[in-house]
Image (tube, rainbow, N blue to C red; front, side, top):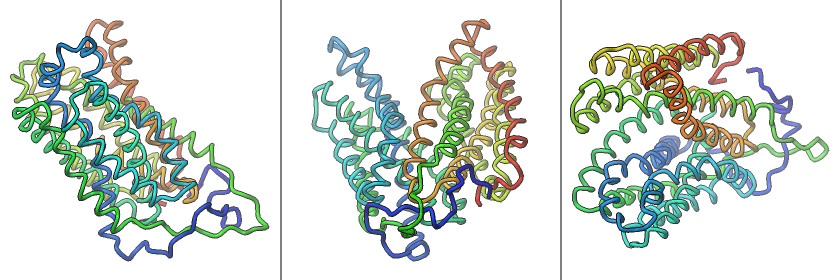
Length: 411
């Protein structure tokens, strides 16, 4: 694979790490490591979607608070904001002090801060606990992404496929569980964070420091591959913005087209999300193709799905468009993950995947105001979606030319 940084892949340029390396263990315990890392990738999904059904109950409980209008939504959103801010710092800590101690420490912090609202009743303290949860998530998602590349090498495509499948299924189940627990109490959905306890225990058992190449003392020290990281970040943030157009707005379109109650809209979204699973499986079958081809095909599916949503006169057509978009979404995220892991050397993969996580979560925040701006200029949400769908189709034609055939996502 042609790599942007000249030092990547040059053993003589590998710098000495600041912590001892474990013996090679990429094969032994692969299933335990893989399941642990998949579980870890589900935790950020848990932090967001499990609380969606609880927002009305949170407002009912904290309504008298003078700043409830600001702070209650932050209970849901601030973890993602902290991921975007702190992911590069988490990646630096993993590269500097070691993957295992940073990862295990973050998992422990996640358990404590996730369960904290079960005993807290001060809104400020709850928001603070959620911010700390986001900092833990930043380390978890960054280091687990790096470890998939560290442990599995060219077999990484199998595990990023399962990450896509698992997070899609977990998202659907967690929304349902959060709704059931919210009917019991506003605190109920926070009990879901008890599921992080077995993930923490799995990390203690299976996560080991990956083996690293020893440096040649006479050779040059390896500088951070800013060129590779910049390419990864730029491609990821653009892709993230275009990907989130559908997940953040399709419920509104379904409601406007007469899909029915919020429960029915949720069920429709759950069914269309099966397309994401099929997309992840499609990526697994096509993983050996170049990153340009993979991103191009995913972009065509995402753009086509958004166009169908924008042009459909009924909610049935909107649902078909959402399924097409999810098919592309199931391809694009595993492709970006595997590609980023392949471009970065193990000694600096933590920082590099931190930049990837920041870019991806930044896209989540940038997407809504961009779509809103388009709606203001064009006179409605559906014309704005039409614009973004067409833009996605145009941009999908770029990657096959931008990246040569030698740029394989799984190389």
